[in-house]
Amino acid sequence: MAVYVDPPLWPAHGTHFSHLISDTSLAELQAFAAGAGITERAFDGDHYDVAQSRYAALVAAGAVPVEGRILVRKLIDSGLRIPARRRGTSLKLPLLHRWNEVLPGHDALFLDLLDRWGEEHRKYHGRTHLLAVLEALDLLTEPERPPRTVLLAAWFHDAVYRGIAGEDEEASARLAEDRLRHAGLPDSEADEVGRLVRMTAEHRPDLGDHAAALLSDADLSVLGGNPEAYGRYLSAVREDFAHIGDDDFAAGRAAVVRQLLELEPLFHTSRGRELWLAAARRNLQCELG
Image (tube, rainbow, N blue to C red; front, side, top):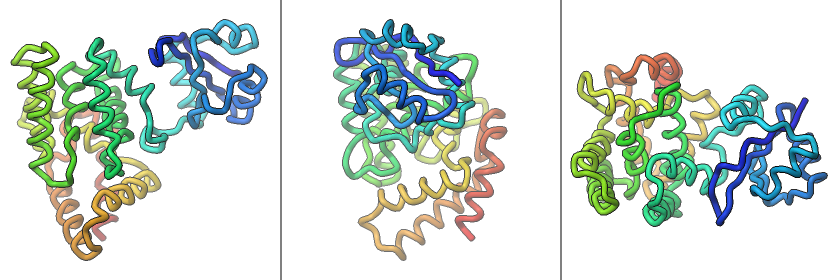
């Protein structure tokens, strides 16, 4: 039983933040935070975000200092971690940290993308989906980091979302090419990001196209969740298309599910198949049934 804190490395609001967790219970974590004078506003479901100025005092109060990766592992092992798709709608801090790892110094572009992913009409295709795709890429490539073009394609793949298949991906790809060139990326890199974004319209990467395989598998990883998570995914997708009547939605969704079941392979990396294939086929078949 312990409370852990990682180094203050996550930039926001003119300072840096640490994460404070318990490996046992939220009650223990909240009691420790209250005793340390941390406000409830800092609580984010399974951890507290605490400013750099509080770090030394937290350690002095008994929080165990650990590296960020160890803290995440302890939170996962505790069973207390909230998956990305169940977190709050803001997610600004974890997304900012990830953005700064891939394209630091371009805050205006980050804020534009954050606003796009947070549009009111998005329910499934929102910030939780973006973070889930980025986390899935981590799983697919660990212990290495995903290629920068793949990460940027994840950031842009639903940057334009109006619920029009094909058109959304094309508009997102053009947005990526334009904004990344403006940010100073070489044409070849901007074009590659655009190509990867367009691939997500059908999720049919060519054989040997490892970058496209990574993005496709990460984007479809939601299909391989447990039944509860898959149920939340279906509910969110239905909300995305709330303007469509039940009968028309059911027919359209059934066509999408059949198309997914016909994809061979559904997941293009060996790691993706290991992680998600069996559950994805089971979920899709149950939904269609």
